[in-house]
Picture 1 (cartoon, one colour):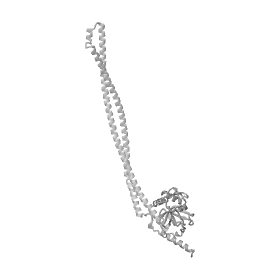
Picture 2 (cartoon, rainbow, N blue to C red; picture 1 turned 45 degrees about the vertical axis):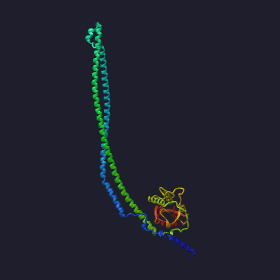
Picture 3 (cartoon, rainbow, N blue to C red; picture 1 turned 60 degrees about the vertical axis):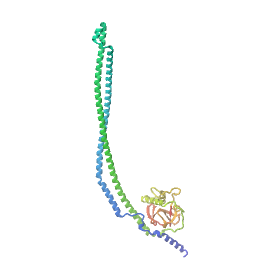
Picture 4 (tube, rainbow, N blue to C red; picture 1 turned 180 degrees about the vertical axis):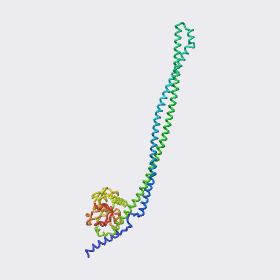
Length: 405
């Protein structure tokens, strides 16, 4: 009896410790399970949005057609504007030439006027009697008469030439002014045409921009509504699948007679303190959930981001939660047991660590997982099972206490 009594006490202690752990209610599953009616309603909304998008296709096509027409109009308006600008450059060139001609003609008129003035002044100096009759009456002889008549002839010829030059210069000035007036009028007309063409091109361009903006807004709104409806439906389906998985796994855990597979508490200790807050442990748990759901493979010695082994997943999860070297390093499962504070299975909280051993000793600990609640864990099991969500009783050799980082 004395030999059996300690064994009896061990089983009694285990029964007391595990009693609350084994009571698992399906209603306690962490994930809310959407009903089939909710999913059906979400699908109906998605279908309705898809039909709305199809119905709006005619509007999109019409807008696209208008955009094509506006593009053609914009090209034509630009061509007209370019042509009018070219004509304006030609008109400016003609106007400049005409202005130079006018300036030259005015200068010629001024020069002719000055010549006439010079001749008139000379005649005045010679006196009013310097005529053909006076020369005949006042000459001192035949030789003097000839000199006087020659001089009178030269003055007369110069006067006639000056008068002819002045008349020609005035005629040229009139013609040049008329050409300059026409050139300025042509330039003004070309300038106005450029202004009108630019206004027309700007109007078409603005209409084109408005049509583009309207078309893009319509397309983006439809795409956003359809994506939102699809996301709601997919999220509800995934949430229901996860809830069903949690229910099934929880039911399996509650019906598994796994308590006999738990090693007795041999008083192993770990750290005296913890390094994390509840918020950090939740971050680590969320990270593990994401990685398991992603379907990444199990690779021995891997610690992410593309694959994990059991301790690699734990290391990466708490690194994500903010733990860094030297307080947080990559260890194996047994060393993580020593490096965490002991927590009885009955007191485990989400984010705590769970361990399995071949013979109940620390040295023989071979597996580690992150506690999810309701006797479930998120783990990197092995190369065959991969990363999964499973019961803590799904493997022999569960240690009687977990660890809190």
